[in-house]
Length: 207
Image 1 (cartoon, rainbow, N blue to C red):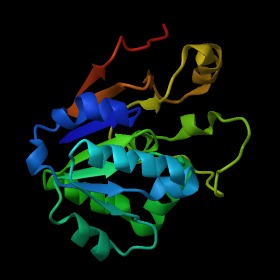
Image 2: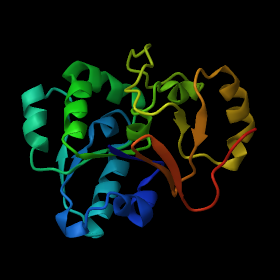
Image 3: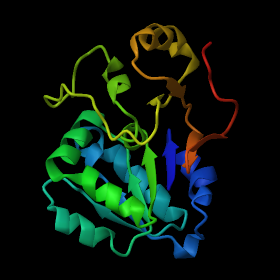
């Protein structure tokens, strides 16, 4: 099983897509846009243009409101499942309502590769509790259960910047799981139980 957990698209364009082991001309990406509906739609459009401008072939799907059969049929001819970023709470709600967790398990067992960017990466953790660090309390969409899909044994903090170090250090004291930190341009490649940091610069680690 291969998973690629990215902070942002710049990582995928420089490193992430190559980690799939699939050549660009053979890559068929199923691009899940659902999380952007709970966040910044204009930002999502820019990402899609960037992917297309770099020569990658993808087809979009919003899983919200879809049946299991509709989602399965969509991914039949795809070899990559790309879950884009946006609002974690909106996305986890849609995953639960559609039964996408069961579908994803089947797709990964078929050998398809999962790529998650930001919120899409958080979904593969045991919990999305780090997304709840926003003190405003906005954009929760009535989600109070932060349990996620649990494919990796750690939680993630994406889009890390040095000026947030103090807050991150404080918040991580109450985490139930180990924390791995990603700046933009960084990601984690997961294959058969190995978790490999990849990207620009060193991985941020707080001792």
